[in-house]
Image (cartoon, rainbow, N blue to C red; front, side, top):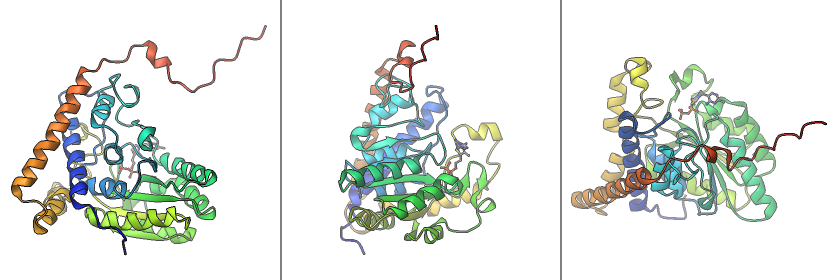
Length: 333
Ligand SMILES: Cc1ncc(C[n+]2csc(CCOP(=O)(O)OP(=O)(O)O)c2C)c(N)n1
């Protein structure tokens, strides 16, 4: 049971912001205005929105290569994010990280991550730091089903369980590891049951239902904050776009799943449509209110793109700034 009422309007607004941000990123990519590769979470918005709504600003999040939703939901500014995607100096990492390496410690976002499974031990480290410092901060890591088969997943769950660390592991099972159906490479139907191997609670959650995600996350975060240790949440979800934008052009269509499956999921399990229906049923918004909200969010994304495109590109010399590598060894005489 949850102790807090889900903030339905805020949850919907966050999902809408993620959707409109990514639609714009897709359009910019297809227009050749966004360099590098970009992985969208369209279809998965309820997971980021539902989990992050249960966190404080000073809680930590580690993210993935498909991280725009987590970053926006944790409070990274959309303009600075869009500038990062466009490789501009105004970006959250000064335009040197790109879509897969957005970070903003000021809101606890320790980083999206191009290394699959890389964010999981980072969150455990952040949780250990909170525990040692005696704060009640919580760390959350998001990761995909592919990452759930990496060694880092198992090692991290074990360590976090042994030391009762304040961490919530959120597996976003969108069914596919790049182009591979997860059941072809995973011995069990549900990652959630793996929690029992580490003596921690594991919960299976409908990742298309933002309220279900919020309620499960709220209980897991409360447990972590109270010093009761980690929880594994598996959110079953679905991505509507390809593994990365432009994939269709390379593969010549959807080579690994049926078009009808995507259409059915869009029609029946779109987290935004489900969220809007709930708002209408509860009379929290009417159709005009939904349209107004959409216009507001679109205007925010327009402003983010204007900010990003007005920002200069970093210079060549800046590539050598903000590096943490050791300086070269002095030459031996
Ligand atoms: C350590 C590592 N291995 C392989 C890759 C290549 N790679 C990039 S994304 C990806 C699939 C990840 O799948 P999943 O964890 O399910 O996340 P999703 O893409 O579904 O969000 C792979 C294998 C990588 N980036 N890092």
